[in-house]
Length: 107
Image 1: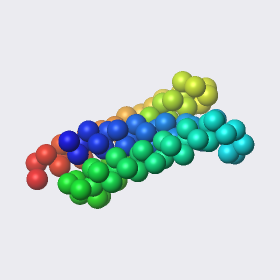
Image 2: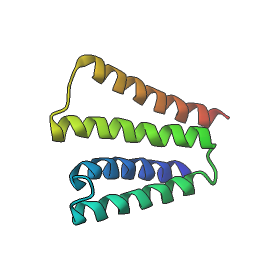
Image 3: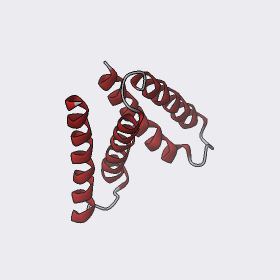
């Protein structure tokens, strides 16, 4: 269950990170409420995952999901760079996340 909690936490990190863009400096109340709620949910599920997962692994995976998801949505929603090197290194992060999950299952 801890890995599912961690996945939810990571996806909610993506939600609040993208939400920050829409708050326009916290000047839009609806987007601000959504963003803060996403932060709370993300931290809640991260805390739940940490009851059984090692903190270093869980934190790395959580931030990795957030980085990859936010970068990909930045490309799709905001027209951010699709430079091949940028995409390559996003792929490297994905490999790192998968590797951490694999390594956690071995120990």
